Length: 80
Image (cartoon, rainbow, N blue to C red; front, top):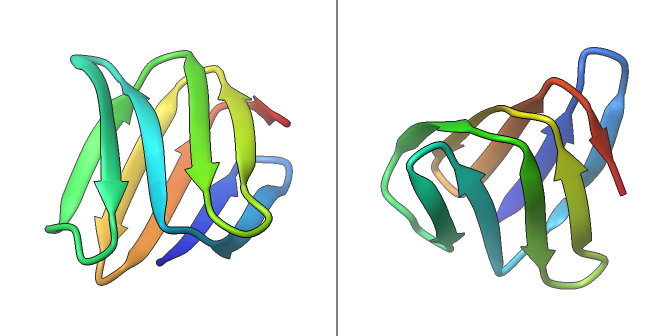
């Protein structure tokens, strides 16, 4: 699946992943390939991207949208 992590200033990450773990406001959760459509609020914490070129990114909160193997994270701020 294709993953993008975007802040108001820049694109922090763009690449392919096999799974992504998020710090949801109601608890952490993980998204895998072919996940059902989803929009969720995120709290401050680490977004972990698993796959070639992945990594861990600390965000200060935001939202995530999952649609047709496209995962878009709109974060207030993020750092690798």
